[in-house]
Picture 1 (cartoon, rainbow over the protein chains, first blue to last red):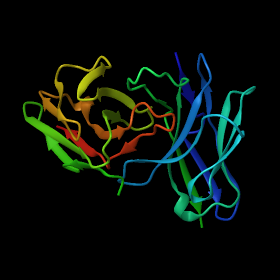
Picture 2 (cartoon, chains in turn yellow, brown):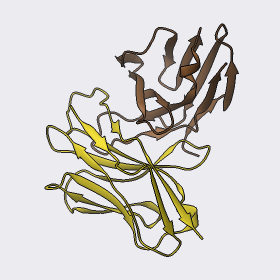
Picture 3 (cartoon, helix red, strand yellow):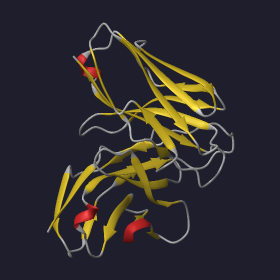
Picture 4 (cartoon, rainbow over the protein chains, first blue to last red):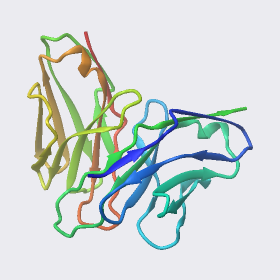
Length: 118
Length: 114
């Protein structure tokens, strides 16, 4: 079974400061890891993903995430937060690619509400 | 605009009503999904349709009934719901079979059951 933990319900950061949203995961094989963001009254939007290769992944809006296999973590980071980054962030994991062609489940965390204060 | 459109945006219904949620994707994807989002809980996958065939039903009560008439449209029929069914219902689509597969979500239907 696969699972995702986002240990913080809420993260507050001042504008201009660096931000980190934490995520740890558990899978039986190699993980595919994703971050999605949800702005108010909107659906989730894809931010970035880790499939293989470089442990530091860069995504949309200046966000990046670092894959750490030994710590089974995939924390989301941004060097300088903007008020417009305030949103709900979801981490998600999927097990390694299967070529069966069938749809596979993506397991989501419970979300972290990021508030960037002006 | 993500290419996935959901209607209505908001729905209030009594426990004896029957209503339907609609989803349409304009991305040419071959899989569609219904998720339930409740506050401070992980997204719950309810149903998956792959190539119009239902492939997963994650122990969802029978008062929720999905329908996928073609690869672009997905419905969720609701009847005799309970107040605990109040939540945001999200539709998503993806192109299954690609390593780069990712979900594209609609804006959701905020459902309130009175």
